[in-house]
View 1 (spheres, rainbow, N blue to C red):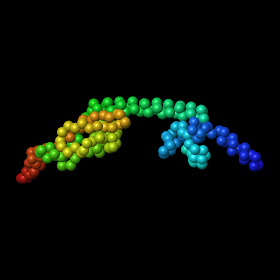
View 2 (cartoon, helix red, strand yellow; view 1 turned 90 degrees about the vertical axis):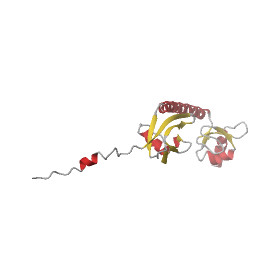
View 3 (cartoon, rainbow, N blue to C red; view 1 turned 90 degrees about the horizontal axis):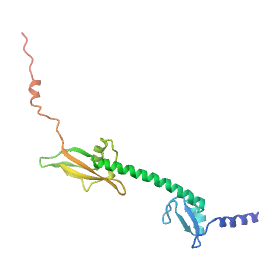
Length: 192
């Protein structure tokens, strides 16, 4: 039985590919801090490979077959990412052609009593059936006056849209009610 144990250890070490610096070449299955990201071929010390990376399932042996599988997987992910970026560019172009209107309470000089922020812009955009999050809205500060603003909407690294935001005064619901009140106060005619 001891001879079988000795036989397994050398065969395992033969399967581990040696790198140019004498370490073990592994293919990372998951990203490992300070080592590399998923799909990278790294060279590590034998003990680190056998005692941590391989048993934890963080890496596998860097065989030609595994490298080809990773390359195919990367190509699929790249195609999916390119399609997603293309869709985001179309959405950004569409959004740059639109404008939204936000009503806010303001004084006679045009200063808002509150301010218009990212959540207000997100809510207004949702009415146009476009969904974004508040962290995608890039404001240089809250909008505190009536007027037209150009707000950047961030979609991806290099994809941004410029959305026109109109901040207008709130239209009150009291449209000259003085005319309606006298009609409502009509007294019933006296009966004979």
